[in-house]
Amino acid sequence: MNEIIELGKTWKKALSSGDVDNVTKLYAGDAVLWGTLSPVIRNTPELIREYFLKFATLEDITVEFRDREVRRHGDIALNTGYYFFSWKENGKKITVPGRYSFVYRFDGEWKIIDHHSSVIPEQPFDLSKFIEE
Image 1 (tube, rainbow, N blue to C red):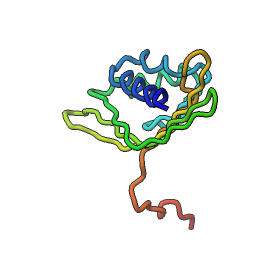
Image 2: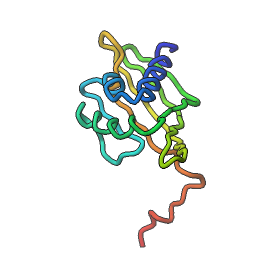
Image 3: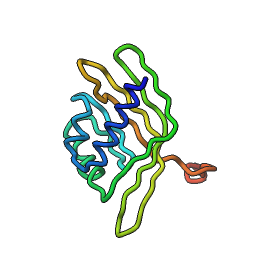
Image 4: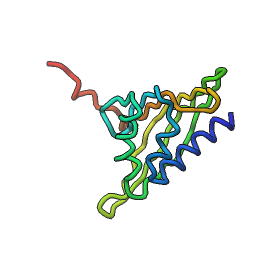
């Protein structure tokens, strides 16, 4: 399982580098990404790259992984948990809590085939905006 945890550290380092190619090369050609800060499903290498052109280049972008659940099933591995993204904008630090799932496939090397990330909702969750009259 340490191998899968290391994959997360590699992703963190790539993201923090600000080099979009360092991040996108970790994704398989058929990968799907639901990014933390985007309503668009990214299901091509070009769309994944487009997301990270904006996200990975935020000023001083960092990610801190917290609790995680790591499982491996043959050539498929999952890393699920939560993390905090931080960056600077207009001289102020922004920190966003997110929950994530990375799914990896081993085909000579581990590649991300599915990555879902979303902002952790505030508690208690306000359902009033979803009530239909």
